[in-house]
Length: 231
View 1 (cartoon, rainbow, N blue to C red):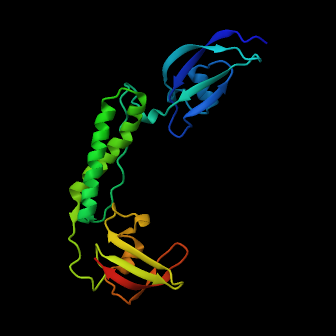
View 2: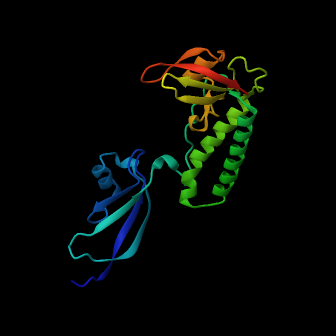
View 3: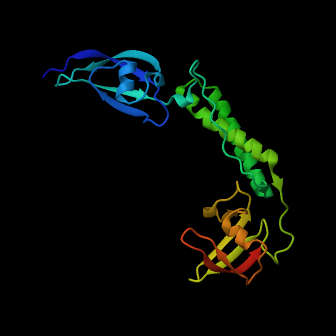
């Protein structure tokens, strides 16, 4: 069969949050109300951005496939193309203790995010507008955390485990571990740091070398012995 050039209509729509970002819909393009019915949600949850025509080739069968590119309305305001404001990230109710190193790292992260935001603001692309809400939410979070930070000095003594200390211990299977006790935003177990508010840190704080404590774990607490405390 000869493939003859023809035209087809392409529409862009916004679905409600939670729906997939791309979907293939068979046959001819459909109005907003019909698309909403097919996706089992109100027609008001869809908003046509633009309708374009572009050349396609007729298929061997009588049914053409139309790909509708779908993006979430959560990132775009109803009355403009400006990005929506996302809810703030949860803030811990606990004291915002930080080490000097952690504070400096967060300042650096904040500066990098501010620079990236300036770049996004200079762009009018849809991708840039889609990225801005999450970036702005992170900026609000880091600014608030830096403002409420309580910097604690390095431990003066290492006779007992305290904030900022590095604590080594061994379990019953002779497996050795070593973690530094730091602030909540600094904690990264893969990098050897744990939050002072974590169950493990709470079990270690105030203890001395040679002490035996219980390490609370989801599968059940295990007994560990502290072998080292250092700055």
